[in-house]
Image 1: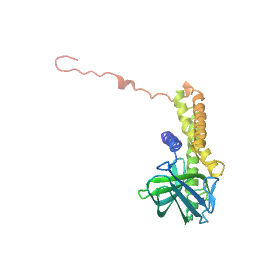
Image 2: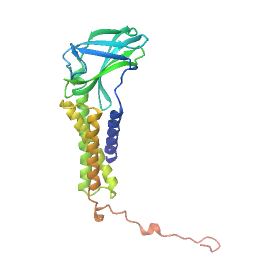
Image 3: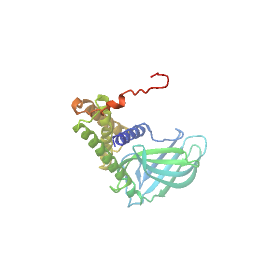
Length: 268
Protein backbone atom coordinates (compact mmCIF):
# COMPACT_ATOMS: atom_id res chain seq x y z
CA UNK A 1 0.00 0.00 0.00
CA UNK A 2 2.78 2.42 0.89
CA UNK A 3 4.55 1.77 -2.39
CA UNK A 4 1.33 2.29 -4.37
CA UNK A 5 0.54 5.61 -2.68
CA UNK A 6 4.12 6.78 -3.05
CA UNK A 7 4.18 5.92 -6.75
CA UNK A 8 0.84 7.64 -7.33
CA UNK A 9 2.09 10.80 -5.65
CA UNK A 10 5.29 10.86 -7.66
CA UNK A 11 3.36 10.33 -10.90
CA UNK A 12 1.10 13.24 -10.02
CA UNK A 13 4.18 15.36 -9.32
CA UNK A 14 5.60 14.47 -12.73
CA UNK A 15 2.28 15.44 -14.29
CA UNK A 16 2.39 18.83 -12.63
CA UNK A 17 5.90 19.60 -13.84
CA UNK A 18 4.93 18.41 -17.31
CA UNK A 19 1.95 20.77 -17.26
CA UNK A 20 4.12 23.64 -16.05
CA UNK A 21 6.72 23.01 -18.74
CA UNK A 22 4.23 22.63 -21.59
CA UNK A 23 3.68 25.94 -23.34
CA UNK A 24 0.57 26.60 -25.43
CA UNK A 25 0.91 25.90 -29.12
CA UNK A 26 1.16 29.06 -31.15
CA UNK A 27 1.42 29.91 -34.76
CA UNK A 28 3.67 27.88 -36.99
CA UNK A 29 4.96 31.18 -38.32
CA UNK A 30 5.11 34.43 -36.42
CA UNK A 31 3.61 36.28 -39.40
CA UNK A 32 0.32 34.31 -39.17
CA UNK A 33 -2.20 35.40 -36.54
CA UNK A 34 -5.89 35.04 -35.82
CA UNK A 35 -8.69 37.05 -34.29
CA UNK A 36 -11.92 35.46 -33.13
CA UNK A 37 -15.29 36.32 -31.66
CA UNK A 38 -17.88 34.16 -29.93
CA UNK A 39 -21.41 35.52 -30.31
CA UNK A 40 -19.85 38.87 -31.09
CA UNK A 41 -17.55 38.92 -28.02
CA UNK A 42 -13.81 39.13 -28.84
CA UNK A 43 -11.83 36.11 -27.68
CA UNK A 44 -8.95 36.89 -25.32
CA UNK A 45 -10.19 40.07 -23.72
CA UNK A 46 -12.25 38.40 -21.00
CA UNK A 47 -13.33 34.97 -19.80
CA UNK A 48 -15.08 32.96 -22.50
CA UNK A 49 -18.45 31.60 -21.36
CA UNK A 50 -18.99 28.03 -22.58
CA UNK A 51 -22.52 26.84 -21.85
CA UNK A 52 -23.43 23.26 -22.89
CA UNK A 53 -27.03 24.39 -23.45
CA UNK A 54 -25.96 26.97 -26.05
CA UNK A 55 -24.70 26.76 -29.62
CA UNK A 56 -22.44 29.81 -29.99
CA UNK A 57 -21.52 31.28 -33.33
CA UNK A 58 -17.75 31.50 -33.71
CA UNK A 59 -16.11 33.83 -36.22
CA UNK A 60 -12.39 33.43 -36.98
CA UNK A 61 -10.23 35.80 -39.02
CA UNK A 62 -6.84 34.53 -40.21
CA UNK A 63 -4.20 37.15 -41.04
CA UNK A 64 -1.54 35.80 -43.39
CA UNK A 65 1.57 37.97 -43.30
CA UNK A 66 3.73 35.47 -45.18
CA UNK A 67 4.48 35.34 -48.91
CA UNK A 68 2.76 31.96 -49.40
CA UNK A 69 -0.83 30.80 -49.42
CA UNK A 70 -1.94 29.14 -46.16
CA UNK A 71 -4.47 26.31 -46.49
CA UNK A 72 -6.83 26.09 -43.52
CA UNK A 73 -8.82 22.92 -42.95
CA UNK A 74 -9.88 22.71 -39.29
CA UNK A 75 -10.70 25.07 -36.44
CA UNK A 76 -10.29 23.55 -32.97
CA UNK A 77 -11.60 24.64 -29.58
CA UNK A 78 -9.99 22.80 -26.67
CA UNK A 79 -9.54 23.07 -22.91
CA UNK A 80 -6.65 21.70 -20.87
CA UNK A 81 -5.59 21.47 -17.23
CA UNK A 82 -2.51 19.88 -15.66
CA UNK A 83 -1.26 18.99 -19.16
CA UNK A 84 -4.43 16.96 -19.81
CA UNK A 85 -7.03 17.81 -22.47
CA UNK A 86 -10.56 17.59 -21.05
CA UNK A 87 -12.52 18.76 -24.09
CA UNK A 88 -11.75 19.31 -27.74
CA UNK A 89 -14.04 20.25 -30.66
CA UNK A 90 -12.79 20.09 -34.24
CA UNK A 91 -14.82 21.78 -36.97
CA UNK A 92 -13.91 21.30 -40.63
CA UNK A 93 -13.94 24.71 -42.34
CA UNK A 94 -11.65 24.50 -45.39
CA UNK A 95 -10.49 27.77 -46.95
CA UNK A 96 -7.34 29.39 -48.31
CA UNK A 97 -5.70 32.57 -47.07
CA UNK A 98 -3.69 34.30 -49.85
CA UNK A 99 -0.34 35.84 -49.04
CA UNK A 100 -0.61 39.20 -47.32
CA UNK A 101 -4.39 38.98 -46.93
CA UNK A 102 -6.98 38.15 -44.25
CA UNK A 103 -9.95 35.81 -44.53
CA UNK A 104 -12.88 35.45 -42.12
CA UNK A 105 -15.04 32.38 -41.66
CA UNK A 106 -17.88 31.70 -39.24
CA UNK A 107 -19.66 28.59 -37.98
CA UNK A 108 -22.01 27.42 -35.24
CA UNK A 109 -20.54 25.07 -32.62
CA UNK A 110 -22.69 22.53 -30.78
CA UNK A 111 -21.50 22.24 -27.14
CA UNK A 112 -24.10 19.68 -26.06
CA UNK A 113 -21.52 17.19 -24.72
CA UNK A 114 -19.44 19.76 -22.89
CA UNK A 115 -21.37 19.37 -19.62
CA UNK A 116 -20.09 15.80 -19.20
CA UNK A 117 -16.49 16.74 -19.98
CA UNK A 118 -15.49 19.66 -17.77
CA UNK A 119 -16.61 22.37 -15.38
CA UNK A 120 -15.11 25.52 -13.90
CA UNK A 121 -12.31 27.72 -15.22
CA UNK A 122 -9.97 26.04 -17.70
CA UNK A 123 -7.28 27.38 -20.05
CA UNK A 124 -8.93 27.29 -23.49
CA UNK A 125 -7.41 27.63 -26.93
CA UNK A 126 -8.87 28.35 -30.35
CA UNK A 127 -6.53 26.93 -33.00
CA UNK A 128 -6.42 26.96 -36.79
CA UNK A 129 -5.00 23.79 -38.39
CA UNK A 130 -3.81 23.17 -41.94
CA UNK A 131 -4.38 20.11 -44.14
CA UNK A 132 -1.61 18.24 -42.29
CA UNK A 133 -3.31 19.03 -38.96
CA UNK A 134 -0.41 21.27 -37.96
CA UNK A 135 -1.30 24.39 -35.97
CA UNK A 136 -1.07 27.52 -38.11
CA UNK A 137 -2.06 29.98 -35.42
CA UNK A 138 -3.87 30.02 -32.07
CA UNK A 139 -5.32 32.31 -29.46
CA UNK A 140 -5.66 31.55 -25.76
CA UNK A 141 -8.37 32.51 -23.29
CA UNK A 142 -9.75 31.40 -19.94
CA UNK A 143 -12.89 29.36 -20.53
CA UNK A 144 -15.75 29.46 -18.01
CA UNK A 145 -17.29 26.02 -18.53
CA UNK A 146 -20.76 25.61 -17.05
CA UNK A 147 -20.61 21.83 -16.88
CA UNK A 148 -21.55 19.23 -14.27
CA UNK A 149 -19.65 18.48 -11.07
CA UNK A 150 -19.76 14.84 -12.21
CA UNK A 151 -17.99 15.62 -15.46
CA UNK A 152 -14.68 14.00 -16.35
CA UNK A 153 -12.80 16.93 -14.85
CA UNK A 154 -14.90 16.86 -11.67
CA UNK A 155 -14.45 13.10 -11.21
CA UNK A 156 -10.72 13.52 -11.85
CA UNK A 157 -10.59 16.02 -8.99
CA UNK A 158 -12.48 13.62 -6.69
CA UNK A 159 -10.05 10.82 -7.57
CA UNK A 160 -7.06 13.04 -6.73
CA UNK A 161 -8.75 13.98 -3.45
CA UNK A 162 -9.30 10.30 -2.55
CA UNK A 163 -5.66 9.42 -3.29
CA UNK A 164 -4.51 12.37 -1.20
CA UNK A 165 -6.65 11.26 1.77
CA UNK A 166 -5.18 7.75 1.52
CA UNK A 167 -1.64 9.14 1.36
CA UNK A 168 -2.17 11.28 4.46
CA UNK A 169 -3.91 8.44 6.31
CA UNK A 170 -1.05 6.04 5.59
CA UNK A 171 1.64 8.50 6.66
CA UNK A 172 -0.14 9.66 9.83
CA UNK A 173 -1.07 6.10 10.82
CA UNK A 174 2.56 5.03 10.51
CA UNK A 175 3.53 8.06 12.61
CA UNK A 176 0.99 7.18 15.32
CA UNK A 177 2.19 3.57 15.43
CA UNK A 178 5.85 4.65 15.43
CA UNK A 179 6.48 2.64 12.31
CA UNK A 180 8.15 5.35 10.23
CA UNK A 181 11.70 4.67 8.97
CA UNK A 182 14.52 5.71 11.34
CA UNK A 183 16.16 7.77 8.58
CA UNK A 184 14.86 11.36 8.41
CA UNK A 185 15.03 11.56 4.62
CA UNK A 186 13.02 8.37 4.27
CA UNK A 187 10.40 9.74 6.64
CA UNK A 188 10.23 12.95 4.61
CA UNK A 189 9.75 10.99 1.38
CA UNK A 190 6.90 9.12 3.05
CA UNK A 191 5.00 12.42 3.49
CA UNK A 192 5.91 13.89 0.09
CA UNK A 193 3.12 12.22 -2.00
CA UNK A 194 0.51 13.52 0.45
CA UNK A 195 1.84 17.06 0.01
CA UNK A 196 1.82 16.79 -3.79
CA UNK A 197 -1.77 15.56 -3.69
CA UNK A 198 -2.77 18.42 -1.41
CA UNK A 199 -1.40 20.95 -3.88
CA UNK A 200 -3.22 19.31 -6.77
CA UNK A 201 -6.49 19.25 -4.84
CA UNK A 202 -6.09 22.98 -4.15
CA UNK A 203 -5.47 23.77 -7.83
CA UNK A 204 -8.44 21.71 -9.06
CA UNK A 205 -10.76 23.03 -6.34
CA UNK A 206 -9.97 26.66 -7.18
CA UNK A 207 -10.62 25.86 -10.83
CA UNK A 208 -13.97 24.15 -10.22
CA UNK A 209 -15.07 26.95 -7.87
CA UNK A 210 -14.16 29.48 -10.61
CA UNK A 211 -11.56 31.31 -8.54
CA UNK A 212 -8.36 30.73 -10.53
CA UNK A 213 -7.81 28.78 -13.73
CA UNK A 214 -5.06 26.13 -13.58
CA UNK A 215 -1.90 27.46 -15.20
CA UNK A 216 1.84 27.10 -14.54
CA UNK A 217 1.75 30.34 -12.56
CA UNK A 218 -0.96 28.92 -10.28
CA UNK A 219 -0.01 25.24 -10.28
CA UNK A 220 3.66 25.42 -9.38
CA UNK A 221 3.36 27.57 -6.20
CA UNK A 222 0.51 25.49 -4.79
CA UNK A 223 2.04 22.09 -5.53
CA UNK A 224 5.63 22.92 -4.63
CA UNK A 225 4.53 24.77 -1.49
CA UNK A 226 2.35 21.90 -0.27
CA UNK A 227 5.02 19.34 -1.19
CA UNK A 228 7.72 21.30 0.67
CA UNK A 229 5.50 21.61 3.77
CA UNK A 230 4.73 17.88 3.80
CA UNK A 231 8.40 17.03 3.19
CA UNK A 232 9.45 19.23 6.12
CA UNK A 233 6.76 17.69 8.31
CA UNK A 234 8.03 14.21 7.56
CA UNK A 235 11.65 15.27 8.12
CA UNK A 236 10.83 16.75 11.55
CA UNK A 237 8.73 13.85 12.81
CA UNK A 238 10.16 12.24 15.96
CA UNK A 239 12.54 9.32 15.67
CA UNK A 240 10.83 6.03 16.52
CA UNK A 241 12.09 4.63 19.87
CA UNK A 242 14.40 1.66 19.69
CA UNK A 243 12.05 -0.33 21.91
CA UNK A 244 9.22 0.29 19.46
CA UNK A 245 11.12 -0.89 16.41
CA UNK A 246 10.29 -4.40 15.17
CA UNK A 247 12.54 -6.96 16.84
CA UNK A 248 14.75 -9.09 14.58
CA UNK A 249 13.61 -12.67 14.08
CA UNK A 250 15.05 -15.16 16.60
CA UNK A 251 17.99 -17.25 15.46
CA UNK A 252 17.91 -20.99 15.99
CA UNK A 253 21.24 -21.99 17.62
CA UNK A 254 21.07 -25.46 16.16
CA UNK A 255 20.93 -24.07 12.64
CA UNK A 256 24.29 -22.33 13.19
CA UNK A 257 26.13 -25.36 14.60
CA UNK A 258 28.75 -26.85 12.35
CA UNK A 259 28.11 -30.51 11.69
CA UNK A 260 31.15 -32.75 11.13
CA UNK A 261 31.08 -36.33 10.06
CA UNK A 262 33.89 -38.86 9.90
CA UNK A 263 35.11 -39.77 6.44
CA UNK A 264 37.16 -42.75 5.33
CA UNK A 265 40.79 -42.52 6.31
CA UNK A 266 40.18 -40.78 9.63
CA UNK A 267 39.98 -37.23 8.19
CA UNK A 268 37.32 -34.95 9.59
